[in-house]
Each structure stands twice: as structure tokens, then as C-alpha cells.
Length: 441
Image 1 (tube, rainbow, N blue to C red):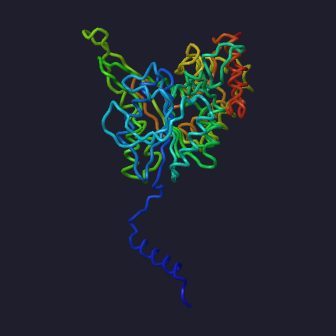
Image 2 (image 1 turned 180 degrees about the horizontal axis):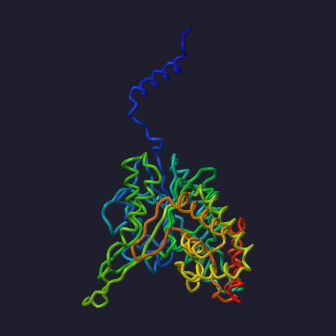
Image 3 (image 1 turned 180 degrees about the vertical axis):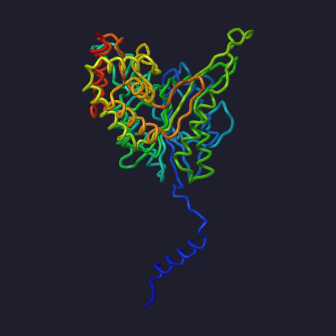
């Protein structure tokens, strides 16, 4: 009996592969599309355009396409032409000269609203249609305020729950539900390998959990992102060098996502590892230190983390009348690093918060719940984190309103928070309500 040709061929190839046992084939895909959502229709305009300019130093190839939707604002263009004050879809091409963007403009979108979920969805759909690939990476450079709009100080004051990607011309921005829904619809069954959120305060458990069904990994900062311009009379950009990771992907298409993420994080933190001398009158320099940190999150593990945080919340609520438990919560809130929100009283470093709770709890059940939460967070969720030496953070934050927050502001922010998926799937918001009343007494 003769074997069918393709069966025979498969056997021969298998024998060859066995004989060359030390030769491995990369399991990663060989083509990728990097989608860059660059919202500079605000005071970030110059920095966003400079970031696009820097992306040109990497460019695109037949296997790696970099496509950007960019929108500038006429008041903050810096050295770039007025053409960039409108919305443009760009295919990023190789150009090592900085100061002028020379990539191909695929389409003029007029004055599109980059604070609109419809615009984001359209961009993702069109990027996939133009540049289908095996892997998709998403990068956004935009303002953000974390899980809630901390500028909204009253229930009656208009505002949205998450201030991400504000568009100054159109006076619009997205909340977390709109941001997530537009991405899911734009992907239309596809999936991001990685989402890089170059936005302030974005690495929160609430944000990552909301995006966990559309991406495998997230790279973001739990802190504010600080950019410095006009350094000693010259334009200076401190930030994230996505182009470094793109060059790696171009040179080695099989590079895995975690390796790319580490390159992005390392390049970001390295930009803040030196002292920047600021000169006001060109005669005396003052040293200005900018703290920075960024982390890689495995979104597949976030469900486990959320489950542990829910268990911890329930145990804390059950024992909330114990004065020793109240004391532990008060001490943890007082000694955990906080980030920009209302008077820096609402966003806390998650791992250090749980560690401080554990160190002050005396009840075995509470200590065990803290340990189990930390095990998942540090061992499974946070895969890689780097920060400057003078920045005491661990990579991910969480919302927890301090009892010092006035009642009207707490009510407004808690109302927004209740709309988040994390709040709806856990007892964390009930725990916040519970201890706020007891710690105020």
C-alpha cells in the first residue's frame, strides 16, 4: 500500500525535524500591525506629534505596519505645520530626520473627535482592514484620570466616569465603558496581543479588568506621566520610546509580547533616571527629579485577582465593627502611597495597601485573605515592573476613597465608580461605604 503524498511528506519532514532536534521554530507570528491612537487635540499636541516623528525612526516594513490616527491642536503644535491641527490617518514610514513628519497620509478625517468611541472604533476597524496581520498591538497617547473623572466634584455637575482621551476642540472624552466597547466592536472578533496605555493613572485594577477580554497584556503607569519641554532652551521629550520595541519587532518578527513589553518599560523608566537641570534665566540650574514607573499586566490573571479582592472585601465587611480592624484600615490608608486624584485621597498602590492591611490585621482570616491576594497580584498579574529609585510604587493602583473626602465629592465619585465592571463584580465598593462610615465616627 502506498502512502498519500502529503502523508509521506509529513513523515519525512518529521524525521528531518527530529534529526535537527536543537533547531527550534519560533511559535510567534511573523506579521504585526501596530495601531497608534494619538490624541493631541489638547495641550499634548506637541508631544504627540513628536512621538509620531520618533515613530518614523522605526518605520514600517512588509511584515510590521505602523498606522496612526493623529489629531493636533493649533495652539500647541510647536514646530509642526498647521496641517497637523486636523485629524489624519497615517502609515508610519522610515525617516530618521526629526522635526518634520514625512509619512504617508492615508486619509484626511477632517476634525474628527478623538474623545468619541465612534472615532476609536472606526480607527481600529480601518487599521485591521488595511493591514491584516497575525498580531495586533494598540498604543494610545492621551490624557487620562484613571477609573473616574476626578475633576467632577458634584453629582449635579456634568461629567463622565473615566476621563480618557479628551478632545479639546470637540469638548468630549470617553469613559471606561465607552473605551472598552469601542475597542471590542472595532476588533470585531480579533484580539490585541498588547495594549500600551501611555496615559496618566491608567494602570489600575479597575481599568485592566475592564479591558481583560480584548487584550492579553497591558503596559501602563499607575502614576502621573510627566513630560518636560523647553529643557535649557531646547525641546526635550521625556516619555515612552515605542519605536525601540518596533525596531526589535522588525528585526526579530518572532519576538514574544512579554519581551516587547519589557523593552517599552525599560526605555520609559530609563528616560527618567537622570537629573534634569531646569534653567529659568540661563544663569542657574535647579535639579528637578521626575518620578516614573510602569508595569506589565497579564490580563488573563486579572479574573483571579478580582476574585481574591472580592473575598477580602467580604471578610473585611463581616468584621468591620471590630475596632482593631478599623484601626488596621486607618493605618493602611495613612501609610500607603497615593496618586493624583481629589487631593491625592482616592488612588492607592494596590500591593502596598494590601501589605499594610496584612501587617496591621490581627485576625487570621483577614491575614490569609491578604496573603492570597498578594500571591496572585505579585506572582501572576504583575509580570514586570520598573520605577525610579525615588518612586515608592509597585505597579498597579486601586480606588479607595479616604474618609477625609467631603461627602458631596465622595457621593459623586462613588456614583461614577459604581458603573465600573470591577465594582459590579465585587464587594469592594460596599467595603468602601462600610468603612467610610465607621472611620468617620
